[in-house]
Image (cartoon, rainbow, N blue to C red):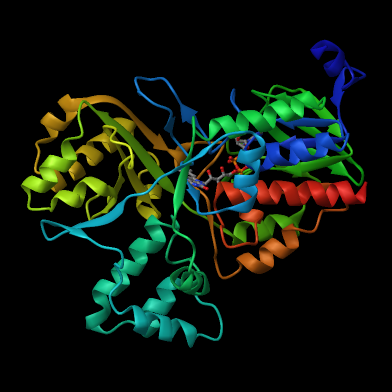
Length: 449
Ligand SMILES: Cc1cc2nc3c(=O)[nH]c(=O)nc-3n(C[C@H](O)[C@H](O)[C@H](O)COP(=O)(O)OP(=O)(O)OC[C@H]3O[C@@H](n4cnc5c(N)ncnc54)[C@H](O)[C@@H]3O)c2cc1C
């Protein structure tokens, strides 16, 4: 059956489909599922030997439960994600817990971190045109009394948005500070990979193909015809192509590993891609032999409710940490976002692991050697160093809206862009954004026939 299906894709020894999709992350697979359900012959080309892209759940390497190396949370009641999980019969699990801050040698339970909030909002609301966050802080919050506030805002942009404050949009910061988003979070039962597996199985069920270990390096095209050429010389043709790649890959120099050259070039689109922002993040997954952090925090004066801690924010080198609340599992996740993560792009994992242990050592007053002895499994995930991602997720620059509008127009009804960076709604940079964008591009192609 599989051979019969695949042979339907061959013509003159070349693989041929109605639609090529380059990239088997959430957006590409969502587009693939939708189009294959409409009877299109879909061929998904993926560089790696696995699907999922920035969704990567592992269940081995010494970890006792499904562990997310990339996306982990569903940030609120997100319509496309929750509908897909429901359809796939996968349960979202509550991920509730408290936010804490470690500062001046003490643990503080805290919801609102930002001092001078009202002043910031007033000044942001007075902005008539968008400027970068750095420019905003220099122009409007340069007084000495705002020094701490400025560094909090920069840390927020770098930590949450994984953005470079010198490119991050002040309007986007305003939107985030004023957003009344439901901050209830979920994890996915069995890990996000279960959802990704469902998308792939639907594509295959509908006669589509997902080709792994297929690094596309060139896209030759003319109106109504595309030819993707892989690094190993294989060629794949179709009438249309959906570029479901990370922004970091689309921004890379065409000679870099993973990058794709357009022949002929599409200069306006390529310029628009450069104007958008791709963030950076390094994630550390540290599994210990026990949940030592609760008793250590209590020893340092924290109240007993520190046991409910989900997030801990600090000013250590690896500043943000979270637990698996509401579950008591001896796993801590460290998070370093923004320019600091980019600066460590070329560092080796052992060096980054040490920075993580040193940060925990400072917070919990435990020697690095003791923490290391307690480690039972660990992973350092340096996403900026990954040639097929080259960063974390997108953030808004002052040019993003215009750039996205241009990229949303297909090139001669032949080249389409999708991915989390193409999403225009409030949940930019998320799995929801990727799924919604994949669905939207498929709907657009479906309606054009
Ligand atoms: C550390 C981290 C934590 C995150 N946490 C969350 C979270 O908690 N919640 C949330 O909603 N979102 C989170 N995100 C964001 C979320 O993971 C992404 O927005 C989403 O998964 C992106 O999907 P995508 O399809 O746009 O891109 P991707 O998942 O990046 O898919 C693109 C695919 O293209 C492939 N590719 C690249 N180059 C080539 C090539 N030359 N040829 C063929 N294939 C190629 C890649 O291998 C990849 O599989 C997180 C991201 C990171 C990095």
